[in-house]
Image (cartoon, rainbow, N blue to C red; front, top):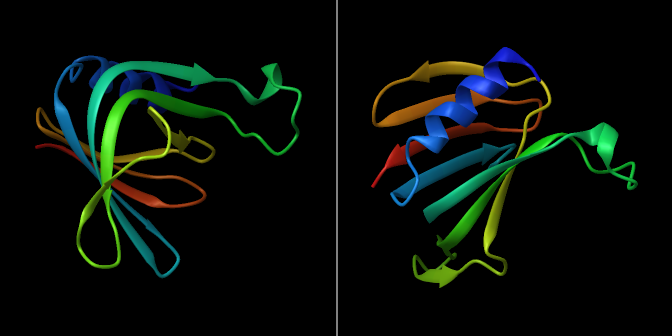
Length: 111
């Protein structure tokens, strides 16, 4: 496992039971999720049958996302996935992590 991935896992593990605000900028789309983290899993792309699945961090817990009307609506699943291909950690502090992957730019902060 790549060093940046392990560093992000360690940071997330320290945030268990906390509510995180995750913003994800992908192309012209900005998503904001409020997520209560229970656990973190790592999915290695080499261990899955489906070729389209990439290596990712699977955040387990519950959360809500802001819809187009600015209302919080529950996530459809009790998890949130961050694909880690090309992961670069821009900043890691006690209360916030900023990262970039091949797909998106993320900011994860304590609520």
